[in-house]
Length: 402
Image 1 (cartoon, helix red, strand yellow):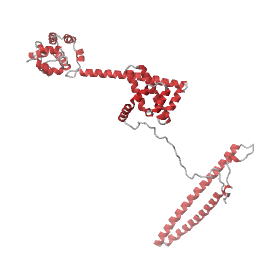
Image 2 (tube, rainbow, N blue to C red; image 1 turned 90 degrees about the horizontal axis):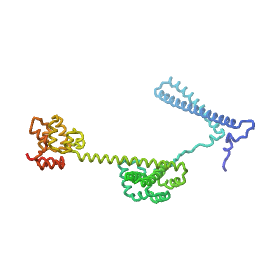
Image 3 (cartoon, rainbow, N blue to C red; image 1 turned 30 degrees about the horizontal axis):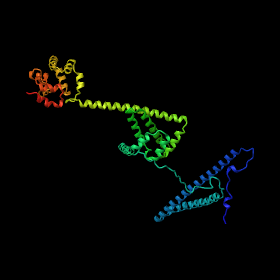
């Protein structure tokens, strides 16, 4: 038969007593609870003090017994008598402590249970459920790996990506993504962005705006998945349901984001066109550089006006006259730049003299420098008038007989 006697002495909850109407019941309940808590705290301090005394007494007894044993081996009777007396006092104190401990156990057993002592935790365990990581995250990949993955994705799904970009109705887009869940990822949004920029560069503005709408839809789906910390594929139906039934405020927010995205696309397209023109100009400039690495257009613009007129009219005699009246250093400076840019192609001997900085007293050298390729050499003259390149210096030199 089950013994239910231990349940008789349970101190009921503070709020289960009926009180007199003139008594403030909430205050009474607080006072009762506070009094019980203070009694429990007092018993706890009493138990701690009892345990401390018990530990100290047992430790002293152990130390005294060890000293007595040591003195007995050394046969010191005087010290032994004093230690034995101390040990007897400690044993009496230990006996009192045991008696006190028994009284405390009886008192604890007779204390009624209450809501704070009726039960204790047998064990505690906390379990926190975590969603598995979202699929398709590229956070752990390097830039090179992301780029490689993007190219592979575009190559495998280009036809379907373009088909999605051309859809116009929300219902069609929803069904298409549900039928092709591999497209619901960051790579699709990136592909659509690049496509929009290319369309704007090609001046296909209406088509760019159409694809931009699909790109913003994909970006909204991805953002929704990040907020909910779920796989983006699980947000397709939710997004299209929301956007179709959205309030005016949310729809206006979507349209504002779409307009801002189109403006960014237009700005980026202009920047790419400018970069391409600049790159083409640099390539053209690099291609027309002369043997000395100078740009002939820049050199021509830096020449004094009389020299510019000589090159514009291709008048050989006028060039000789102009150089003759110019200061020697200035003439050498401009002619060397003309040679380095390919504007002037002297024969090999004259070129060496120019580079060596020959003096004007050397008549032969002066004639070679000022005259360049001999004017009576018909073949060489034709080469100059036809615009022979600096790479053909050896052929030009060969055309001018010594």
